Image (cartoon, rainbow, N blue to C red; front, side, top):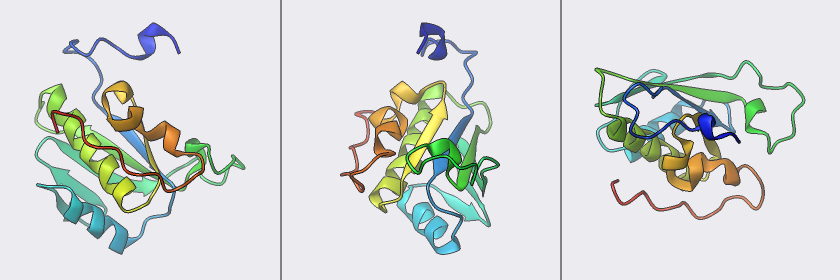
Amino acid sequence: MTADRFPDPGDPERDLDCAVFVAVPYRDELWERVARAVPGAVRRDRTLHLPSLRADWGRNDHAGDGLPDDDFIGWPSVLVCEPVDDPPAAEVIDAVSRLLTAFWTLEVRAVASCDYERELPADGGARYCRPPWPPAAPPLSPTG
């Protein structure tokens, strides 16, 4: 990867949007369990509201493109995560970290694709795409 793929963490203009690919289709009971596992989260239908982030669970347009199971781009679901009310980057990163960790704790593969992957647990989870599955969930970062 090139150095410009991961913008400077101190750059106030960096993009804080994030796509979290999920290896299973939407299931209401799973989304409810994720919501309960993330402190401060409020669920409304397919949207999870956190103080600094909104996550919408949708169908991945690339699902079923014939990609291997360990290629997260072809997984059936994607969470579109967007900051709300212009929060500091650290708050958004913490919120996405908690979402990822909730999925991993529930033994569901999830991988983040964003400008701050390196600041997320397990570099956003890319190493959890491949067997053996499930791995032990990584701990939250020291700031989490």
